[in-house]
Amino acid sequence: MAARSLRLALLFLPLAACGPHPIRRTGDVSTRDMSIALDVKNEGGATRVRVKVDGKLPYTGALAVTPGDRLVLRGEHESDATIDLFADPDDDTASVVDTPRTSGTFVVDLLRAGDRPLPGSEATLPAPFTLKAPSDVLSRKGTLELMWDVATGTTSFTTAVSVQGSCTKGFTHHLASDTGAYVLNGGEIPLPPEGVADGCEVTVTVTRTAPWVSSPTLYATASQARTVTVRLSP
Image (tube, rainbow, N blue to C red; front, side):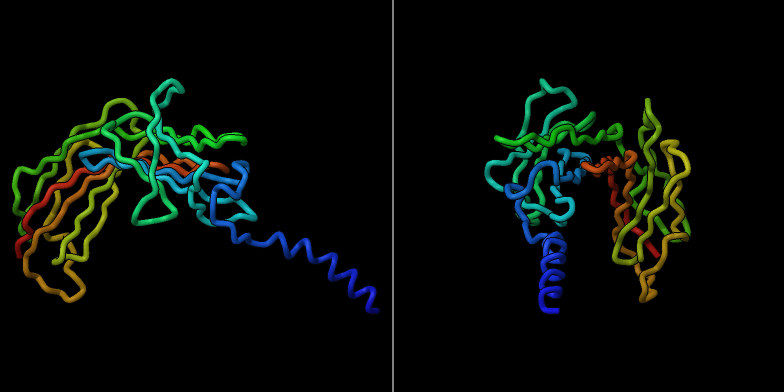
């Protein structure tokens, strides 16, 4: 009986060892066991590229990039110059870089000496645009027309209008089509939970988002956002 119990314990020992692994550094994991989460975002200035490296089973979870590994940003062609991504001071599991390029395809490669790289993680930004409002005041009984550049070429992106401010609960409205204009109705802006109707400054943001990309080695998002500030009055 004791011998059988020992054999069963030895049988299940390898299975226990295959559970979630405590490794949290890229240098301890083969690139074959990694995936890239890539987010490219432009809000009117420099474009911020943010990358997280995740481990696949059994190395689940975010992996900090360790010396010897490099995350580099380039354009869509192999010959494009590369820019190193650096650790995000606000999140030790992410790497970031700001680049003046505001359109096109952004490609991130994980490079490693002595092992196969993990190249070609890419996201394409929607076209940049300019957002305008004819007035900087919106009353709850009035309207405000927002105007922006109509995109040319591909229309596979989605467009949303959002409102945030201390005197509103805020909301986001996804547009059925992007015509380059939207009429914001002050009466439709929800009051905050306390029901206070006093006015405040609100930020109105129009965001174009490209279709997200998902594969065993990549999850990528890309968006252009523009913001105007207006005074919301009672």
